[in-house]
Length: 441
Image 1 (cartoon, rainbow, N blue to C red):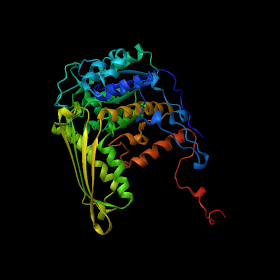
Image 2: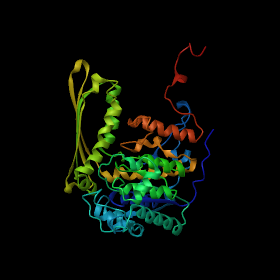
Image 3: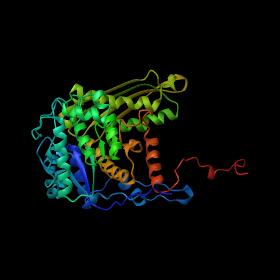
Image 4: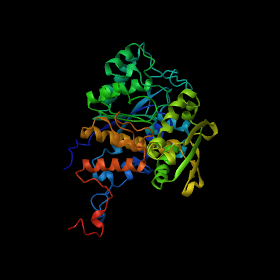
């Protein structure tokens, strides 16, 4: 029996706090795809299939044909930034996409202009924004953001909205008393608590206006009790954190494979060079710590050293990020993995991943916008763990541990879609196909 899903029809507002390289690559891509001058490679919602029933039935429709998902043609873009450039100007400066492509969609991109952002250099030290809102308290900033959202919805006659944080990595913050309840958080907004970062103000404002929120950075944003409480109160989905794009994606693909064969790992050294705005921000030690914590947690949860101490307990895991301006958005990740096998004999794996940061992130933004809207239309609210597939540090209930294995994450996601569509989950057990007699008698 399928779960009731509200109509997907109407205009869907996509709010983007932080309209830099990732956001403009996403918006430009959607516009190009809608004009049939590009393909949505990397997007599960647009290109992925889902197996239904037994293998012998050979039923594998596109996900978007199985579940009523919003179409990218329904999107209306809006958002905030700390620089006044329109989306076309920002995309040109980011230099992710070729100018020839951007010129084909110049009119559409030029029409997308950011609203003034909420920003403080106390939280992102390597940026100096010039297009910033002015208010006396963080509570007042939240109200200004809410006014932006209301105006955007009214002027564009929007039926629904979603928000995806595409802004910079903030300094490392730990949960404190001001985060423990909605009441304490709102009091902290009014008293300008230093424990409340700009990303939290955006999340609060969006949820208060009925907008689901996904956090694409490793910031402490929606993974605090105060925001969980607000999401439950408003019955809205939240999710995060930190888009899983380059090096960490490789780890969540490779580490489960090594573990499945009971191959040991002595060390995993990872280093990156990156020259875009994100790289500049991460050149600051406080912002890097936020990213480092996000990256380091992956292997520990996948490999389960407590269960397999001889294989993984003493694993040396090191992550480095170096700002290298000539590389721009074309990030390069190097990994050296020291493994051992039969009788403890050592081996090595080397990975050199020359990737494009925003090219990998843009389809994640697309899928999250669409799946968040779906979650909202079916009545899912609170933490959406079924979307862990997209994040380095997937959010989870405090009583659970996060699932980092990308293959388990994908199975969880697709089984959630099967549930929504009234189909049985896929276990891959396969007993129906085997020759055996005792269970058939």
